[in-house]
Amino acid sequence: MQKNITALLLCILLFAYSTSSHAGQTKEKVLLDSDMTEAFDDGIAMLLLAGAPNVELLGVTTLSGNSWVETGTACALRQLEEGGYTDIPVAKGLEYPLRPNRHDLFTLERKFVGRGHDYWVGSLDLKEPASWQAAYKAVYGQNPTMKPVDRHAVQFIIDTVRANPGEVTIAAIGPLGNLALAVRMAPDIVPLIKRVVYMGGAFFQQGNVTPAAEFNWYFDPEAARIAVRSPFREQLVLGLDLCEKVIFRAEHYDRFLKAIGDHPVRKMVRASFAGQSFEKDPNFTFFIWDVLVSAVIIDPSLITESVECFIDVNDQMGLSYGQGLAYPVEPPLGTQKARIVTAVDTERFWNLLCDPGYWKGKKQ
Image 1 (spheres, rainbow, N blue to C red):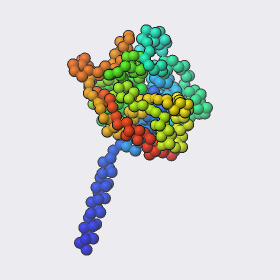
Image 2: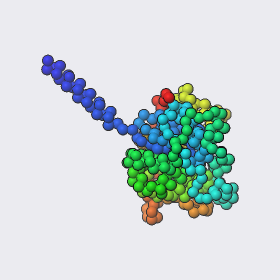
Image 3: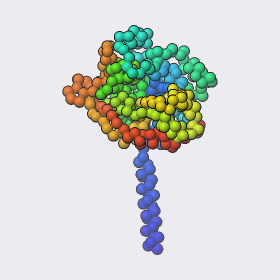
């Protein structure tokens, strides 16, 4: 009899422990701010977060950068539709950088500033679609089943942070216009943001779009400077100092295709620039900038090396326009401290990205 009572008490204690342990597991609330593209790399970054069991993707805000905001909004909607994540809201944001006439004067600017090793300049060299609906129809040949929320991305960021004080991680994987205007319009949200994780900047090496600057921060240096100088609780920066160390090779591409199986986004992956390049040339290599942000949000222990510095962005037009600046000591007045990631565990990163568990999608 006593043995039975002891066994019963033990079962009750184990159940109570299991229940309390499960209840204590809270999901990371993430708001993704992106110049969205199909598949690699913004699209995969978004779907990886959407499929992560320890992440609650509160929404996706879009702006121009890699693509025009109209095209990026269409791409975000389509990929969420394909994955079955129709409950994740999308908010359309800024069309242009804060500096006036940047698109109109870009050809002249390029002549004076020069080019880095990457020729890609996104919407600075692309024709603007008439609307997100026109972009969707042009790319996908059909009408969408989702539509953006009836709020500008800037207001969506403000509302989401206020509704979840101290809980929201902002994954800023594009230019920083939406975030910059959000903190200017509503400075009260700055201490309410849990942290900002950026893909941007090049601090200890050359840039890519120019010898000095990385693309995201070069696209809108004025916005980038406002963002990184805001006194957020925590800033984590994944710039070229990390991203150009993680090489995307054919073996990873093949492994990723196997992992996603018949996921609806497979067709987009194969049709993307990276997919077509790998299938034509097995020696092709690529980078996966934005996907790294999603990965370290899902598993921060992937980070193996980082350095804490005060950071800034050069917003003065000239040869170093858009350059990320790091100050280990004696920083300029107004700069804020950030953790610059310089290395991750690449083996574990590829294991995470190529884990089929993230690519099951969600039934509509």
